[in-house]
Length: 306
Image (cartoon, rainbow, N blue to C red; front, side, top):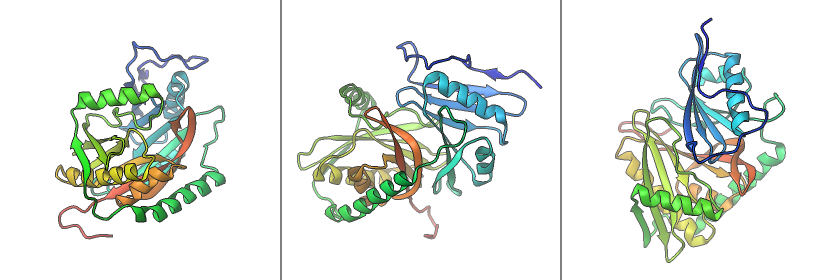
């Protein structure tokens, strides 16, 4: 077998500290005769997304991912794949945690995740974690009655990327972040928006889309904390969905802490539904939390509703 081609794979006993010389997001590649991966490493959020170019349950995939994750101090790794690839990832230690309807336009994306720890066994959401997410979702469905079907007077504008990233850096420095506004996919396009309602605090939202696939990741920089902020965010999510349809984007998805009723309310009021639950997916105030996967699937021309 040919020698593997890798990028920065030296083993380290402890996670190394982040330095200014290293990019916050980096693409790392691993290639052998029968495996070819790209790891999208986000050092800001301690998160890795795997893009797999070659199907197969190859143990070397898991070993390489683990080595990079432990070296970088990453706790969560995910991949989004076609249905027939799920079994290959579960055989190398990942867990199927959700589905993004229409991720590949005509077919769904299945999200498989892995929590990196001392144990080799797959980590799943605990029973208590599942119940917590259910309470959050039930509260969101109850609270969405306070969000009007038609919202008048909300402010919503597309932002210059430089201004949006300045706000991102300000929020992260302050210490109350949720989204990172950094690359989730390869060669994707980013849009940024600000929104407010009746003198509420301004919230910032980003949409990263890949028109070749027809999906978009939605990121909220800070979670809403008042009724007016929830209304503002719900309206922003609705308008972003309409804007993305102009680019042929039919599938939108976002992640929310499983205990955040306010953020869940905004997603539900905007028509999103829960289609997954990820173990230890988000770092919130220095603590890893499970994440609800919220998704919205719009119709393509001539497509019938499910």
